[in-house]
Length: 65
Image (cartoon, rainbow, N blue to C red; front, side, top):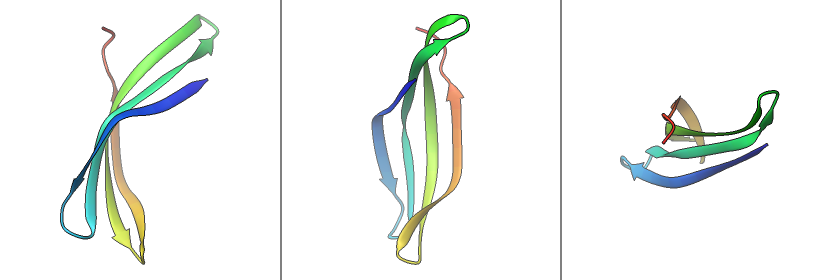
């Protein structure tokens, strides 16, 4: 299985909050043969104790092109 992030964009909201959007591309081979899927994601991060912590994540499978 192979997975990679693509076209990630960080949207900063002040010094402690960021929203990251992008694509997760996953490919591999399963029982039905080879597959490739693209997921659109939105992750929300908050800076706490000097580090970044993800506090919410949402993704969905994009329709095949």
